[in-house]
Image (cartoon, rainbow, N blue to C red):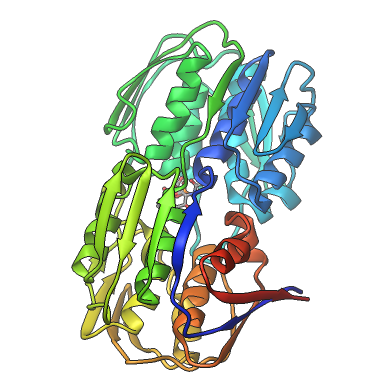
Length: 416
Ligand code: UD1
């Protein structure tokens, strides 16, 4: 198993290019199921989850030609509308094939995702929405088996905001008969990116980015060429790493308009931030100040940035309160941060952090994707050497993270 070895105490300085967004790329790749023609995607990040999605689409019969940061997907010969357990268990986002398969082929068989490190994460809202659109759904042998002659439009009000739920139903609705209205829809920028790609393919969608999305079904979609948006979570992770190490970095190919709540919190922590076009520059002089935060759906503070800010708060001046409202079990990095000397107490979904002047290097274990990023940040500020074990979590969703951090001056290397 691979590990990262980090020598703490080096400031980050320089420029880093932000990759395409994992959480936009995955649903957009699934949009290729919706047409017989070729979907050409650019700015596709090179990471494990994208490779897993390519493998899943290929298993179904989609022809994929991959290049450097791009790929062409052709679903004309798709003949196996099925996502098996071994794929869905490693990448929950595989559930995103359900809506597109059902709406184009009238049938889909997708494994239930099962347990997940950061909480139970059910898919009941996806299923409920598809049933409202006329699908027949049976759960058998751990699989969702969905059939429908042709889905029809419906008014669907989400009980709670779900990102992939919104995306799955939006993709199902583009080829349905009639008008679908999604109320209490997710407003995440990745939902907008997917909608823009679908519109480029001929879909009729209005309101993406608001909590009400209206989709008028069309008979078929055509091919398109689309560039995936920059990753706001990768952007936020590098900015927090720079702030924690007291460094000065510039992100290129980034989108500051998708990062408002994160940039606000970094300014509150004492960073100076300047935005110019697709560049975001952050400078931190002195010790960061502790910041309180509460995760919530976009445009509020993202749950996917909570763990990284916890590492920042662990070495900040003062105490802070972090409340996690999206996932019930997303504090698994806390125990590991404590191994590095962080002073954190958890009560339910609330963490109280007392900032320390410094952390002490140790061996820690990555438990999920963003938890891993938080341990890497903590390792970069800890005294001595930190070894982060089980970094396959990190490789799922960050492109060449140690190479990018090394280029910024971090002392970090991968060992087997
Ligand atoms: C997506 C992101 C993930 C991010 C999360 C929240 C992708 C591929 N992943 O995950 O990185 O952390 O949004 O911003 O885009 N829920 C239900 N029933 C459902 C669906 C969701 O109860 O049918 C609950 C979940 O358990 C969770 C909450 O709704 O408590 C939000 O989850 P959701 O937005 O669906 O997360 P994902 O789309 O899986």
